[in-house]
Image (cartoon, rainbow, N blue to C red; front, side, top):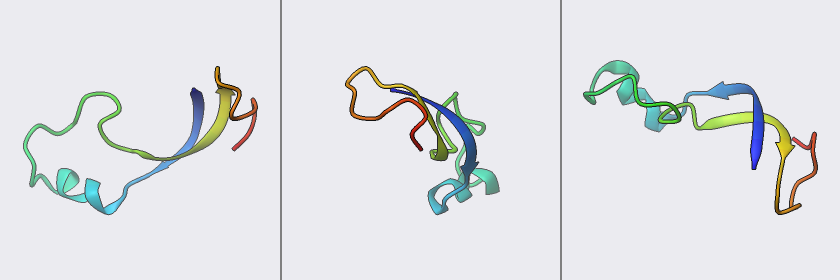
Length: 53
């Protein structure tokens, strides 16, 4: 499934990274910002339709 992100948020589990509590920040691509809103670009299983939020 491919989703085009429109917005992302920081959740409570991300805060220690931003405060420098955990070493190794910034994380590799995809490591943070997991609270996302977007639209479906493609879904091979057909579970979600293109354009669905």
